[in-house]
Image (cartoon, rainbow, N blue to C red; front, side):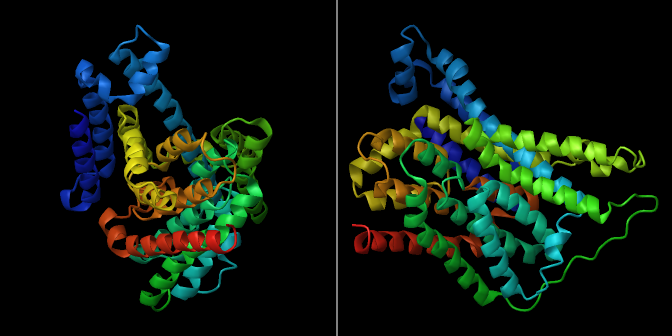
Length: 448
């Protein structure tokens, strides 16, 4: 069963990649993949107990526990909690962004972006995303920027190029900031890295991991983009006023920016901060529009926006996370980390490989495994932790399903996996390698 799980996981990813030729929605494949892996895990039964590192750890505290107990009462509930945090965070962020969009709040930005030149727009969007991701996080930033791109680029395939660069820039920007990516947050909270040091050591590598792909893609982009044509409001629809538009924009952006502040002050998980911001925005818009026409009011309130949430994308996210969680519980990822330590040894190379693996499986269990393995070996601000933060963050851009930002953008824009693989993966890979080499060079020249 241990080997069979790996085979099924690979086949599932291939089916997701071939979504369009197979004409099977990737969300359906992801859900089947996630559930099947857990069925295989529990079907291993007693024959598999010695292969499961997680179960052996469970037995130390539960001598009378059974394999089924471990799966149902321990592992599944644990992963459900972690996955639910991500899904609620995603749901809250998407709703806030859609609410701003419904009020035409992004006009404040789009009206100030005058250029239609593809190359200039690409670089502008890239740098905005990069620095925004460091302040917010890569997932929230990707959602905001895709909503913004829809106002700037009308043609679908052209917008995919920009969306691909948004994924790279968001992951790169999140890699150097202690609050920009879930893995850097893990390292920061765990005391492996400190704020000023992680920014100082990884800013340039992270910046280069974005600049290199931007430069490569700029070579093939030519001409100007066409802006979407504004569709007139339906007869009888009460449009928002400029004051309402600006108020919702600033309140919504403020709610997103408040999430890391909320976490720092309360030490509660970010999804609670996101839901708190959504609640504030919900109450404010209900009060703002209470005198509006009842027929058109739902278009401008959270209750109406929630009916339009892209549920298949959320289910795709759920399926992928459930599948990776099964591999984590079965011990595949722990075995992988041990194999890297045994057969590679070189910490720089191990980090580069972890970054490459994070483009296939979730970077959270990979980083968690590294912390468990080296947590008592290396102290705070050791170069291993700094490079791990960079590689786990920037490496997730190589495949579109390698990061939360990539999965979210893939769902929102319906980007084809194979299209991303052909057009974006190579520039992302080269940028990732350049950043890793530059970090290594900086360590030897300036921080040795």
